[in-house]
Image 1 (tube, rainbow, N blue to C red):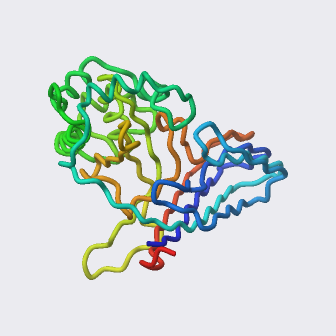
Image 2 (tube, rainbow, N blue to C red):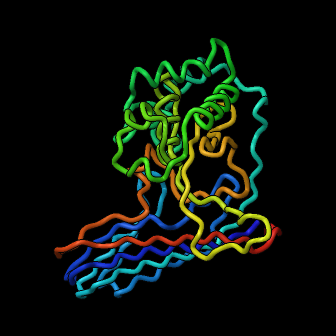
Amino acid sequence: MIYDIRHVTTYSYETQVSFARCSLRLEPLSGDGQELVSHSVEIRPRPAERTARRDFFGTLTESVLIETAHRSLRIDSRSRVAVAREPRARDAASPPWESVRDHAFEALSLDAASPVGYVFASALVPVLRPVTAYASASFAPGGGILAGAADLMRRIRGDFKYDPKATVISTPLRDVFEKRHGVCQDFAHLAIACLRSLGLSARYVSGYLETEPPPGQPKLTGADASHAWFEVWCPEQGWLGFDPTNNMQPNGRHLVLARGRDYSDVVPLKGLVLGHGDHQLSVEVDVMPITADFS
């Protein structure tokens, strides 16, 4: 399947801003059944300076400097990706999770794909004792890593309520766990904390999920949204994806934007401005299928 992705972010300022510097991570990744066909970003007002580099995780990171006074900043990202991905069966054979845990520490590589960099606590994913106890229920002694991760995903979907008003980006993981509600970002962080608490390597995936309108209704422009899920490492099968928000393994409708230890490594847009007063943020996302022909 081929998809067109449009991700438009608009900041509207109460008073004029004289300076802005932003960091953008908006180019989808290629690999693991996904191929980036094209990508462009239009910024208004026009930047005085734009530079790009690949960060440690392989994500294109663009630095933008705006020196023109403005009351509105609009960043319009457009991408086309081709996806051909089939999830593994949840009951497929996989090695015992204890052996996977031990194998991760034998890895010799320290690159972004190595499991070593994703086994310890990170900025937004602390290891908490109650979370360890919660995770243990899915990983019986000698149980397969795939079955354990799938059961953890299923339990998070059933035990936690999706509530977009319950949390913000800075809500601590402990609060999410205790109150049992949150959004996709929170559920991905929780699953990662569960896995790392058992010594397993897990990483955060940001991206998009194609949504479908109710039967008989047209799809609304800007009605899609960013999405997040997690991946757990297995020495024989590589990184395996799981979407706890929807209790499903990522398929051809999951479009990968970036990967990292947690959300702080994949923030699509962050920066600073010189000015005062309040501001309003508007984000519109459209994920539109183009054709079912992967070519």
